[in-house]
Amino acid sequence: MEAEESVFTHLPGISRQIMILEGTLKLEHTSRYTKTLHKFETDSFEGDWETRGYGKVTDFNLMTTGKLKGTIYGILMKKDETIQLQPIHSKQFVGLYVWKGSIEVLSGGLALIGHEGDFILAMTGENAKQMTVCATEESEIAIARITFPEFQ
Image (cartoon, rainbow, N blue to C red; front, side, top):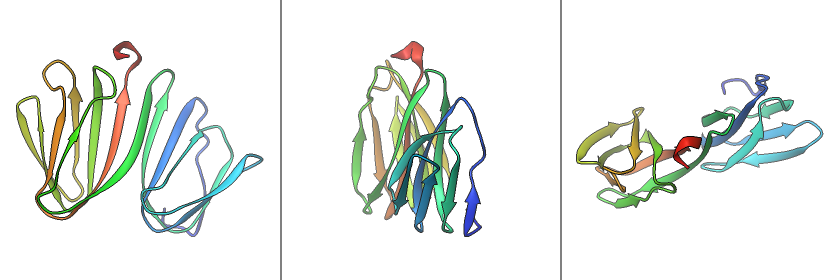
């Protein structure tokens, strides 16, 4: 968000989630609530809500529709730190956005490298029960977990 004040696009039928990567954002959902978000804090709201944002920020968004479900969150990783991402459901897509740093992702016998600005999308399931993420340098990662109704 490059302007100090912005009006969110009206998107009926879309569920929205926003997470701050850098800066501070004050959200005003008209006739509902106001919330201020800082680094890695999130808010979930519907696309048909009248929403205004105040503050210049870099954010990460997940938008879903219908029965599609998802969550987003952020993590800070030290160099050489390793984490395991266990699936919430038997099959789901996991997206990792490398905001800062670089990572190596092991999933289903594949090794993927992600550098600053990269987005890695992988599916957990029969061949990939979990995902291993290793920071090859200090890193900041935004994670999205997306589950399709037929996989629940």
